[in-house]
Each structure stands twice: as C-alpha cells, then as structure tokens.
Length: 481
Ligand code: AHR
Ligand code: AHR
Image (cartoon, protein in one colour):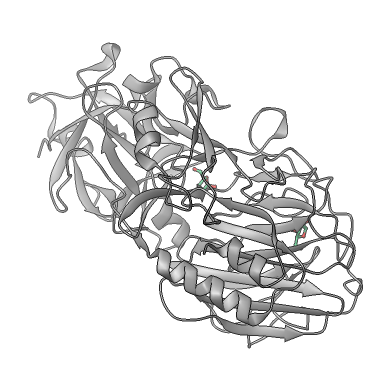
C-alpha cells in the first residue's frame, strides 16, 4: 500500500497527494507532474513506470534532452484536482513577470527510489507553487494531517519553506489562518534545540516549535539527507513529528494544546502552498519529494505506517553531474562556444568581475593566471565543484544577484552555496554546461562578454533566450598555467 492507501485505511483519507518521484496510491497510474521545455515551450506529463510505481524519469530525460526543463504542475493524485502550479503574487511578489514565483528546474534534485531514478522539486529562493481554489482541504478548526519528504540538507533561514494549508488570497489574513509544515533554520519566530534546521508548524505570523512562541527545546534539529516531516491539527490539539526518511521511525517533537493568541480555535482557509509562506514570502529554499494532506487527524499508528512505507521506498542520492568529469585538483580553462566568441575564455578581471576574454599562448602571464581555474570539491555540496582562482588562491567564482564575481571564501553557508556548480552534458552539441547548485534553473553564461548564472528566457536581460544554448556551453580544456 502507498501512503494514501494507509491514510485511507486509518480513516483519514488524503485530500491532496503530491509527488514527482512516485505514486502515493497503489492503484495510481496517472500523471505525477508536468514539465515544460525551453527549446519550444512544449509540455509533457510524466507518470509512474507502472501503477503505484516510481516516476518515469527516462521519459523526462528524453523530452528534455539538449534543452532546459521546468516543473509546471505537480498533479494531485487524490482525485480532487488539487494540483500545484506556479504561485501568484500575494502579500509579496515573486520574481517572474506579473509577480509570479519562479518554477523549479526539472533536474535540480535527482534521486533514486529502490534503485530507479526520479527527480524531486529543488526550490531556490523565489520559487513557489500553490492552489488557491483547493477542494476538500480543512477549513476553520477542522482536523487535518500532512506529511512531506524533504532534503534535510537544503534549507535556509528565510520565510518560509512550507507545505500545507494556507490562505486562499496568498495574503496574511491573521493568526491561525494557516497550518503548514515548515522546514529550515529561520529563527524570526520559533526555534528548537541546537542550530537547526527544524520542522516547525507555520500557523501564520508564527513558526511554532511547541506550545510557546519562541524556542521549545523538545523540537530537535533534524538534518538527515532525507527527512520525513509530519504535522497534524484538530480543535485545541496539534503535533510535530519527524524522522529519517531512509530508516527508523518517527519521533514526536510536540503533541499538545494550541498556542494562545488567535490560534485556538483555528481559522484555516484550505488553500495549499509549497515552498512559500502564506503571504507568498518567497525567500526560502528547500527540496520536496512527496507529501500529502488528509481529512481528519491521523493516528500516530497511521503515520508510523506511512513512515515505514517511505523507508521501504528507499530514497538514495545519485550523481548531480553528467558529461565529462572535471577532476578535483586539476587546473582548467573554460572556452566560450558561441560563434562570436570562440577564442574567449572565462576570466576574472582586476576588479573581480567574471568576463570572457581573448586568451592565447602568447597572452601575458597575468591574463593566463586570470583565465585558469582549479577545480575543487563543491564548497556547498561535494557532489558538485567549485572553481578556485589560480592566481588568487582562496578566491572562487560565485554568483551574487546572478552576476558572476571572483570573491574570497568568507566561510558563510551563502558563499559556499553560491560558489557551487554542477557540470552537465552540453546542450548545444559541444562542450559542457555548468549549472548553479542553488539555482538549478540557472547555468553559467556569458552575455555581452560578462559572466552570469542565467535561466533560459527569464526576466533579466542576461536571461535572453537567443543563443542561450551556445552561451551556456563551454569547452573544458587545460589551464594556461
Ligand atoms: O507565519 C510565518 C509567516 O508570516 C507566514 O508564512 C507568512 O504569511 C507571514 O509573513
Ligand atoms: O546570485 C543570487 C543571490 O544573490 C545569491 O544567492 C545571494 O548571495 C545574493 O543575494
């Protein structure tokens, strides 16, 4: 049985069931999600390999070959039509045109389930999905439960990487108008023991880790690579539970009465959000693999059985890179391939801007050093790489406001993540592409001879679709020094 079969048997059926990795019902053979490709804007639904099975990642790989792909829809498997789509502006605007949030890359979170490849939803800051006209999700003080499987190593402190029940207006309509799983190390409201990340509950104008606003030490930091988060609420009662999604059982971090101050009774509105706060706050990051919401308050035993099913699904990591390997420790150059620029190489200039510059064997030794990069294990994820400057040791290529700069490693998590890149097989037939780890819709690109991390056809000038595939394709060669 899948998670939603288990919830059904427990008397608390799923009213929303979302996953890009697998069917959450034994009998479900319909579409799991939809992708849209950059080359021609066409879309394709991706289903499971068989009823109840793992997603058909090969179908996505062939549809998205030699182009970029975004996840446009995460379908609801419950039959209620509670699909998740690009979130609209609310209290806060998203970065896309008309204030919509970004869509996630279709390839940012590769995993395997029981040895079969699938893709999760890797959500960078700015990314968000929602359904503001959902059907059958708890309203008012009605009981509900929810769970999600997340990447416990991908999070930040911004508001709010949530999955669950929120306002139908994408606006903050007051305390108690939300009830959603939160994951991350935001300390603006609540926190738990240790330094995070924590599973908390977003009840609106507050992330709660227990009865009190602020810190509750019963809510333990939880950072397994795969995390199960479970939250539930009914009149004057709610709970937070968490587990390693790859083994073991759920621990209860809180179970008790509601906080005071407008949270009892609750005023749930019954919309669904993913990756954002109730008011479309969209600064958070995280990765979602699967999740569901129920009608009624699931028993601990039902949730324990769902956790056992998740463990049996055997989530495991897989390679984040493809194409030619860049050996750690090697000194390399990256040559542009666009017709304009085939004698130009990725270079830092004396003001630490990353540009493409004509370099040859007769160039000055200064320029040769500026155009040579030492491949290091990825500072933010060792499955990818970072590029250390040959002539300025300790300084790396990073993006900032999506422009590439050379900067000294300041040791911060933000720096490490901004300086991590995942090489991929090329898009244009020559060379490799270099994907930003923390913004996987974005690839290292030159535009007017300046370096960026750019998304195909995005809102910035440097995201322009023309010559995108060529501009992001680089021939990796030996360093100049
Ligand atoms: O409750 C925390 C956040 O506060 C909510 O997600 C958001 O709507 C508000 O900014
Ligand atoms: O480059 C995009 C973002 O800009 C980086 O992640 C962050 O460091 C800066 O705010």
